[in-house]
Length: 430
Image 1 (cartoon, helix red, strand yellow):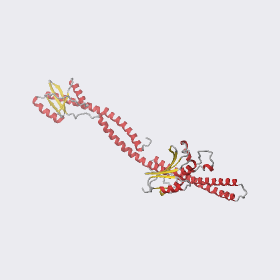
Image 2 (image 1 turned 180 degrees about the horizontal axis):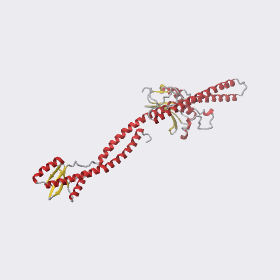
Image 3 (image 1 turned 180 degrees about the vertical axis):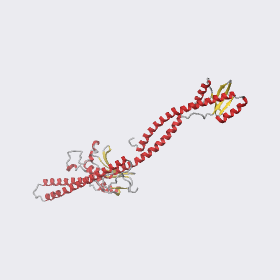
Image 4 (image 1 turned 30 degrees about the vertical axis):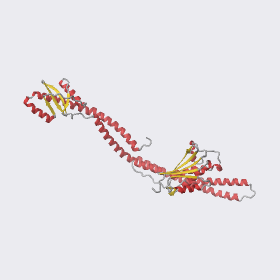
């Protein structure tokens, strides 16, 4: 399974290998140890029965009771010169079958095995006598099935404990690395992974720390560079505004307004670029989400409906300024390209979900990731004046990535489009 843990995968792999080893070991044990021992034990049992019958026949009648007593005490054999009609033995133990075959081979005729009084009895003809000799049925072979089950259970326990020990040693630093990598947002203040443990994990931690340091430096340099460019551009932009205001009154009004619109567009582009470059290093604080969201939405001239699901006093920890910028950009985008804009928010146990919905033309599925790229526009013919700078949703993606939020585009219903912001943060009351 793609979602299975390292422990499950390692245990499953080791278990399959162990089962193969156990199966091979059980077969070899049965083939080369148990079967030969069983054969030899059954042959010895048959020889003892025949020898006991021969000795009993050769002894004088008065000595036979003492011999029978000695057999019972020393060999757990009961020998009797009187035969009884007993039920045929129904046991299917291989050991008894081998004993019967060995007796028939030594006596030269079939031997009937019977059972009674918790003993197995054999009719042994010897020297004109037909004797019944009883022996304990506990003298049977080791069962290969039970042996295999025992070995398999013991092997499975050993495999599980071994894999648990090994995987915990490997998975613990890997889990820490995964958690640290998931929380890394390009900030300069990240916690390096401890470079300890096996050589492979030390190499992984060192590579991650190096990568994180370089990425943080790259992002910091980018922010500094673009902030400097923005500052340097705004100085001549301010001079151009002053020069525009100082133009003679006989300058054509339409030309004046065109220059003014271009300067405003340039200023907006510089501001958007700077916000995109900075991303967010804002710290979090506890915010009462419902009134804060309603306040952000109320800043728009057009009345926008806000629906709420969840506790009215729900308080969450988030970067308030970044959250406000994200919601503002989503609403601006929805108003620019859609109609009937509304906001739906709900609180789940592990996340706050804010959806911006509209009934505009929507975004085709193949473009739903591209719209979060800088300067990407669905309609290439849109001008800066009508279509914005192309950085609105890119700033949204940048801020979401910086704070561990998730932004997605989806079809809410048949006639609505949804831009969903998911803030997976813990409740401030938790």
